Image 1 (spheres, rainbow, N blue to C red):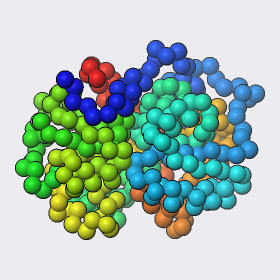
Image 2: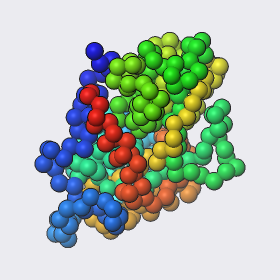
Image 3: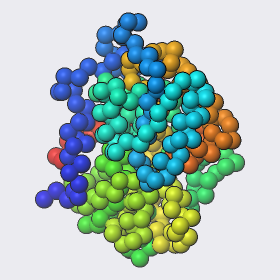
Image 4: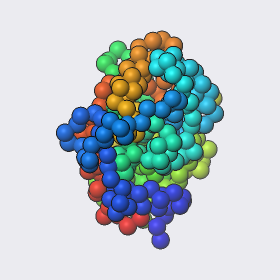
Length: 323
């Protein structure tokens, strides 16, 4: 029996690289020669909305995201000189579907979610986030340059006896989402690389957020968690002993950072303004404080679709898994 604690898992893999659904991937606005292309968008077909709709993925507690939604909205309106509405998606796939139907124009998509959205013709990446790297104790390396990649970490309950990937056999692992790159895609591949069957050798607990995955370990609901490094910072203000009770074990390989992506039909002039707006916001103390509070972003750099080919490699590998 497959040990999956959420029906959402099945949905995620049902849409992975859904070439069979008849969706055509639109030409990217990034100019990336390696991206999937279709008939180019004509000038008459570009979308130039009067109100820009931006949506955040629920990768952490919704209350936290909602608290920063309005400040980000205000900054974007000031930079773009147009009406902007920022909302929080109900789940990762909800944002993909909203962009696919053009109800949302800009999505702050996680890495794997971006790849899935691009394959469905719903999104083109324009920016990737930059963050401080962290050491194995969760300390920010603020004296080092910002990085455009990150690692997923395995953390476990201090009394679990887990000291290696092999020790995860038969254990319950908390994750943020089955479409989360750091929460599931890279970890599942890491298990496979270490001789564990991701389908049968562990039980996955879908908690809905990286902070919730940490809490599941802290509260004894899960033996271990895979999160971005270091998601323990999300709860350390409330749980001052989290670093004693939830301990680091191992890293995955580096993962490309999450994205700011736009729908393919958005007018190139507006896309350029959106790109400049996010970069400008991150360059100010006020703006940086807001994007840091939302996703621990410290800045943005231009991105192209081929930056995410490694994600496609991992997702293609998972097609052999019978979920």
